[in-house]
Structures are given as structure tokens and as C-alpha cells.
Length: 157
View 1: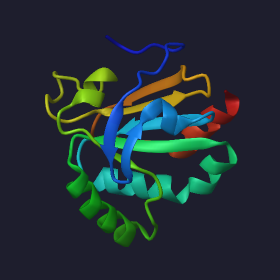
View 2 (view 1 turned 90 degrees about the vertical axis):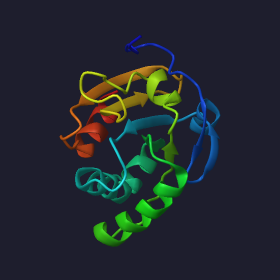
View 3 (view 1 turned 45 degrees about the vertical axis):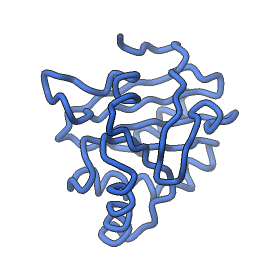
């Protein structure tokens, strides 16, 4: 079932590149951006995660935590973070959720079987301090996102 604006964002526990998180507890009393990417080591994803890392101060100013998700493992994420840091000239400064069993991806309807049954599409969820979904955007897997636009939307919310 699709998540709609105003719904309580589903809570979950997951392994990440920074340890285990309980999503709602991890969010605390601030805003959150949960976004998925199709797979580790893909060129568009690599540049996108580098861009998000470079925007960390903008997210911090707004009390926004950012977390990415793919269906790859924590071990793969660790290797990929090194690649992102090197190729994008930054330090990944947010967790990457490992979801090889698709639990979170299915909970948030990030798998679109008509496109792929094993990769997430590029979904974005902005979640308010009340844990309600304030924005959803879904892009095709091959299309990168503009996180300056996501920051602009957070400001408008």
C-alpha cells in the first residue's frame, strides 16, 4: 500500500553503515529525509550521495537528518562509501541502510516490479518532527535527484 502525505511514516529497525537504528527514535524531534537508490557503485548514485554529503551543513541548519537506503549489504556500503569519498571529494556523513531482505523497501513501497523486482526506485520521503510524511517523490532509477530542490521544499514546509 502506498504511503500518502499525512500518514505516520512507518517505523523500522535496520542495520546501517553507522550501526543499528530504530527509525523514529533515530529521527528524534527533528525532520528526516529517507531516500533510496537502486544499487551501490552506480554512477548516478555515487554523485548523488556525494552531493548530499556536501549539503550536510544545510540539512543541519534545518534540524534535518538524512538517511539513504539500498538493498545492498552493510559491507558493500562500507566499500562504496570509500569510493564516494574519493571520487566526489567529500566524506559521507549520514547512514546508509542495508536492506538486502527488502523489508524497509517494501514497507515504503520502493520496489516497483514493473521496473525491477530487486532494485529500489529513487524514492524520497520528507518526514516532519511529528513523524508524518510531508513529501513523497519517486523518480525512475536512471534519473538523479536535485537535493537543492528538496531543501527548498523543506524550507517551504
